[in-house]
Length: 127
Image (cartoon, rainbow, N blue to C red; front, side, top):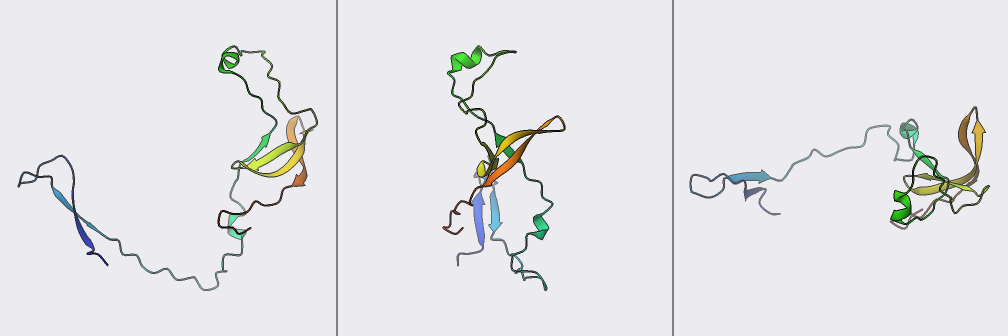
């Protein structure tokens, strides 16, 4: 293991010898973490149940040249490529998890979930 004390020159201020002052940087020492008695092995999600997550409903999209975007103003209509009645995609942090349909509940838009999508494979190859 390398020497825990490392000398690092820093800053524009000159040291008494004419060079930059030296700073001694040390490798951190952390206390060993031990599992708490009675703690589960990470299988319970109970501690996360109240964490708010933003769900995005993607109604549709279109591609316009910048010149057309610059002409937009109040009253402009942008036609989307998706057909009326086509499934709406629901995502969390950009990851699709369900599809549904637009409904109205008490004068607010809502989405009725029609299909839950299968979880995507994790980067480590696990699902």
